[in-house]
Amino acid sequence: MENYRSTTNIVKAAQRVITASGKSGCSSSDEKTTRSSQDEIRQDMKPMRGTGPSPRVLACKDGKAEANFVVNTVNSMVNSGELTPSSTVAFIYRTNAQSRLLEEACVEQNLRYVVRGSTGTFYKRAEVQDCMCFLKIMY
Image 1 (cartoon, rainbow, N blue to C red):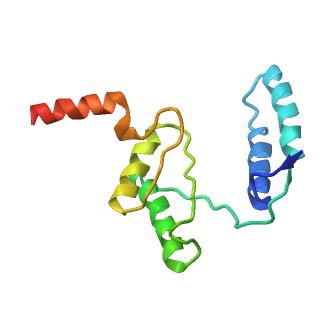
Image 2: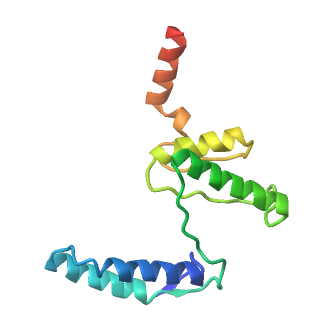
């Protein structure tokens, strides 16, 4: 299967993770059958975007440190000329709760951003606006 989204290094890293996760021995036989057929499909992926940079694993103290690292990295890439100020960069996160920290880091460091998806930006969510209104009234 051809993969037009990811570079060779990303696909290879994903394949190593998939292979390693199948060796844990913590799943039922039905899950193993489903997983093995899905793994075969993923193992057969042929990246079509060139080599690309090697992925790196990073452990941060907390979510705020992680968000600051991401935004600092983008700003550093702009400052070094790797990216132009008009370049598009995507932050992909697993849970919507992570968006708040990324948004705060972007605001603090003057990095323009747009949130795509069903929930919109953290601060425009109805429950957050309700809380902000309540806090304005209280304080």
